[in-house]
Image (cartoon, rainbow, N blue to C red; front, side, top):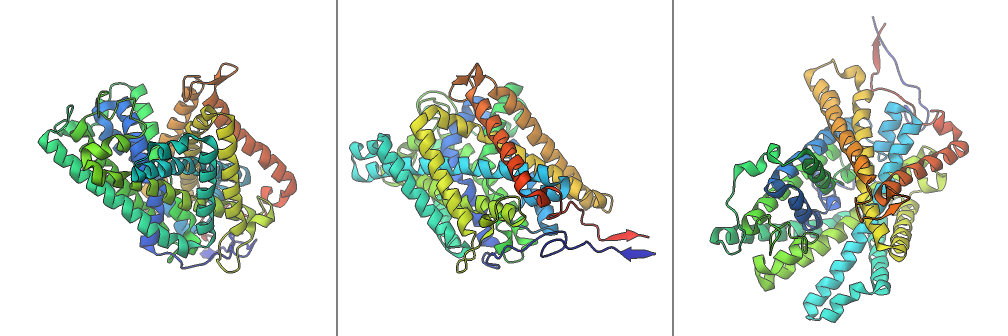
Length: 514
């Protein structure tokens, strides 16, 4: 005999899953995928990471981009399956609460929030630098470009960009979507132009160091050592971070159960395709050497496109690369508010944060207070870090990888545990709800542990230390411990959530054998 077993409603819906009042059906599949691509900021990631990754792995650059894509793809399967079962804007927070309980879920949500604030501050700084660099190029004035080096001007410009991005996000997904279509299209078109010109230069052998294509470039086993492989992998994983932004907009998406998951996979395919083609084209054109225009030249490796724009595309079109990098950073700055604001909204809706953050704007149907708070936190964080020490700011960015691996791995494991009752139902369920997410979680946990070990060394990051321990380690672990302290405070203020009375731990099984 079979008996249906209904879950006990705790909040507005079964199992405590609550509606937040967000504007539904605001974004379709294309818009959701565009948000995912935009948050990653592909052109910015390429200009800042191509050189450093080539410096680690040489001509195996395309292979490392492929390897870095794999754990992200495996985690994307976990996000897709969890979103089908629980389409909640709290994503990682909500899902890990339902799988592992309130404390683990709270820390997972904290990992996402603090990682996003760090990224927002970095993106704002990059957009500011490229704003003045582009202004200098357009005016032909080095004095204008040098304004970025004026700390007061730099900070004020950065604050203005943060305010503008916050305002667009505050006005809702419709406004966000319109801005993103234009900025993402600009990025991809300019990137395609660069690739075409780079292949042309490679064919004519215009630059010393140019290389003929080899399929061995796609073989990760030809990387010199495990240490080199690990360093390159950490960099490439960072290049894919942010695709999950389209999942946090699930309650505002048409077909919230399926569309965000599909959009995430589309975003991943677009990203890995762009990265591979660009890496191959650039490597064929200028090589991966440390001299001249070589990608691994330490003098230009932190901003490859600034060095290659004129030589590869010509002075006239080369300026488009500067525009594309600025557009990339600005677009990502704006969309990155989506995951942090909606995660905070969900945490507040489930009483894991103060209830004031659960308010949704009456007209725009957005988490207004959470969005503004994220903007203020980003502005304060960047300003303080810039005034205290540029080294501290750099080390904070290096610590970002720890947060990314932390909450992605937890989400991957949460998928397998949440669906544990379904894993033997079919081969598809076993693979996409169990095996693949667990493999992704294990991969990211390994990177997390290796990064934690490397961070202990004072030479990691800026080279600074605190009592002989690397500053990056102190910052990364310190931020996680700060989350633990805040959680303990919230445990006293919101005991119902931490007792599991608001958002319940559960599985999707609704039917049992009697």
